Length: 242
Ligand code: F6R
Image (cartoon, rainbow, N blue to C red; front, side, top):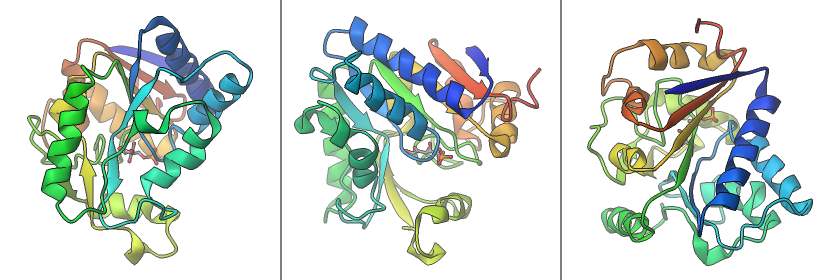
């Protein structure tokens, strides 16, 4: 495990952006695993700026997102499909058919999970997976108690997660109760993982990850078993780390 401490959110975003550009430029047909939420927004803006400045091309890039809410139409403003279009895909030269998110708005969610998992397997493996962390230690939407052996599946969102994500919705009740998420084992099969952590509210979570025990009650704890994990943490989140 490699821990990189940076000053603030902007420095974290820049580091992640440059790392992704390096990976894209060094890899033949790179496959990226992407996250949504507040954490990667600055990184996506930096990638857009870098594309517009001619430093990177997404022509040969394939992406797989971690998760999507169940029950939201793809074009719902709060869907993760919409998030990715707005924050990244609409502004770069990625081919739409090479971007993937689970479809949370199908009739058969179990089939959707199998199909999504198969697509990931067919893409060989994810070269670089970007992660954020939930206050409860979730990665993707793998909530506490999820088996470390899980593959892509439907989850019931933890009340803490629904509360944390209510800021994006008009009212708390509008936050979906379920999501489809890449499983923990699926995430762990990525060749490289970069976990981004920013802000004082994540300080406890990153401390527990770095110093705590391996436990399914804290899903991110599995990441320490990965042989190519980098945690990029800003000062506010690193206050409890030595
Ligand atoms: C999002 C995801 C989640 C978030 C986590 C942190 O695709 O998989 O695990 O990374 O909930 O969210 P933010 O970044 O909004 O604090």
